[in-house]
Image (cartoon, rainbow, N blue to C red; front, side):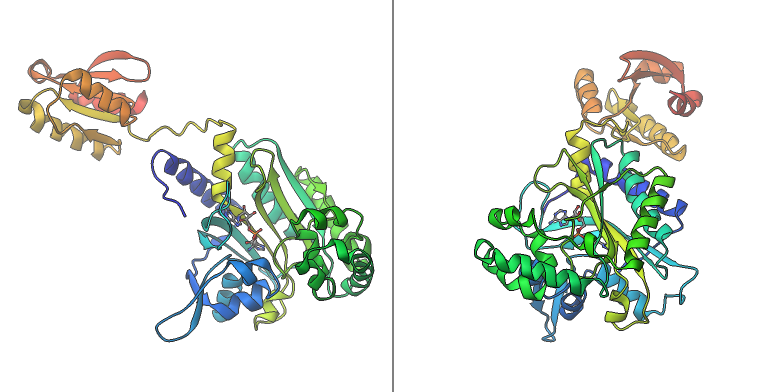
Length: 411
Ligand code: HAM
């Protein structure tokens, strides 16, 4: 779990502002759900056989002896909320929600993998139209490209539906049954319970044996196959590049049909910036009307790492425009008045409050990340002009009090 502070927090705020603006464009509305939910929600929603539920949840009994869990992801909570508050419109208009917030997973920490991390997620309910799939994937792609991230790859797969899975399962059981001695203990259990999970196993010997295994993409029923083709066409139409990855299965049990992930070459082992897919059965499994749905989650820490590793200049700066420096105690009151004038003009400003040598004040101004130092000495007060030092250009200018705010705004 980590603290996030200046200067990195500026990047976080920039990412969050970009998300909110993009969400306005795509007509998604924010939803804020609690961090704590009944444990049962995630067991039923995410799936009892997943690593998340089996190994990674922060679960405890509250003082009322109820088992509660700090959310490991956002989808199950949003589904609970839309069911609970009757937010689904029986189809159209589709209900589109997004969230930004902390999630908790007791995983082994490493680069890009934390126990408290933050997700931006979207969930779209009410339509199985392939255009919705394309829209959701486009949102993630747009945000990452607007952050100037290069070397990203959109990986796309379809993992079918309850209609196509039985034949796939039979074939997978046959294949994995023949190599079961080479699979880990957990994957041996998965052969008959949930063979899709084997594709996600990180044990080297399992990974080796997955290479030749049958994939669900080759077993899609007519409906899923047509849907997948339409998603690909829609993505091509809006210029979102993608690659097919027939072994992409995702780590949560609720998915049907479209599954996708966006990876970065700059992240190392934890290379998924975000991922998601369709979950057409989850709303009804959690007690609602049958409602098709799709969404994704994006890991903000991983996006931050990718932006920093690629040295991307988003022109963020510190945000501080003016550092007001009274040269002695005599100018402090006037400086305080000036500070107020700047702030009333919506200019971010700060004032030096202790007496120091002028050179040290300049160093402080630079340390604070200010664009300008506004110097007030005896002469400045006498002449009614201020010395404004541009700390970026290393130049200096005399400016009257009346013109100061406009000068700073325009430079
Ligand atoms: P997920 O793939 O488990 O999906 O997580 C989505 C993203 O969250 C990952 O791609 C990654 O960027 C980030 N993430 C996951 N675990 C960690 C961690 N321990 N540390 C840092 N970042 C992490 C979901 O959570 C689904 N709810 C996504 C979804 C929404 N599917 C449909 N709707």
